[in-house]
Image (tube, rainbow, N blue to C red; front, side):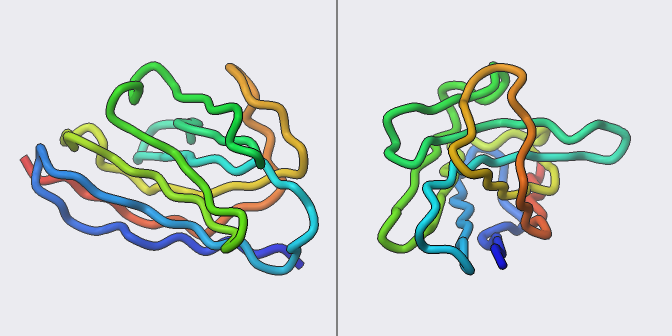
Length: 124
């Protein structure tokens, strides 16, 4: 059974940087696309970044381009989200997601497996 576990959230000062990590377990054979979502109270969950298995394709939503960097290590079955120049509006619960052979692009938000989320709070 596939499981995802996020870590790295916390309280961070505006302007700082933070790295979130996600570990996938339960299936070391399938080539999963991995993605990061975030959600704040009163808003729908939104996809912010995605990366293909071979890291030859990435996607970023417009609001995070230039500040967020997604990467993965297939030997460890992990995905990382590096966030630069944190802003108060980045405050949200961040979720890791995975789907087998999922295409990457605008509007592609269907993922099979989800982590429980990690809270990121940016102080102003």
